[in-house]
Length: 357
Image (spheres, rainbow, N blue to C red):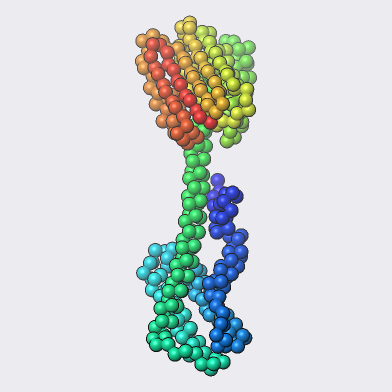
């Protein structure tokens, strides 16, 4: 199973714009437009000609843009994302100081470009240094916050996707373990019946082929119709009835005609357990199943007879799969949406499972 790059859901338009690579050009355009608004300032005192003022503003804009690009594409990936925080702060400070020196150099050149002398300001360079540092620090912090947010969102979706893949792999493994061992017992019994009762052996093998076909092909899907899974269980119990002289079963259904999709072979371990521990040689052996679907709630019950005085069954070994594995599969498929109770008393073994779909 291949791991694909995380994709933000279509309905999260804002996150898609912020994170998705295909919108990177639009993000750059939006960033340039926003920076242009921030650096907007008029030549109100007409100290410079319009062309000179435009060139000065464009120079300041390009220097600021270069600083931000260095921060976004060099300093943040090289230092911040690698948790070299001190190195990152030092390099940001160095770049800001260098930017100020460039601005200061331009300012020394400005008097020769002025149309009229500007006002004399005390501590002019200190004020300029403070204003430049504050502005560039805010812009660097803003771009850093955006990059951290992008990384957080991408990592979150990547972890979610990896968790989904892990869960799906685990589910596939658990499902692959659902191999009713009595199907293989059927093959062994058929080998004996071929010599003693060929007609009965032929009937068993035909039914067994249908069961194995569903087991190998249909149940490989992520979900199947509930009615198909019930039909598989009915065929399985019918096959058991053909094999045994004293065995009976009943399947009660209510509301299952709905086209409901469900994980395949979900109930088979319980049915297998009922057959495995049923009475084979005494009259009155039975398995009773009930499937009741009410709106979004599915109630499953399984009852089977036990021999009087039989040793209490160990549910951890039920169905050849083990109760812990069955419970784990339920937890993955129906987290906080299932109730499972198992009773073993008075010659009857009973399973009660409620699923909120």
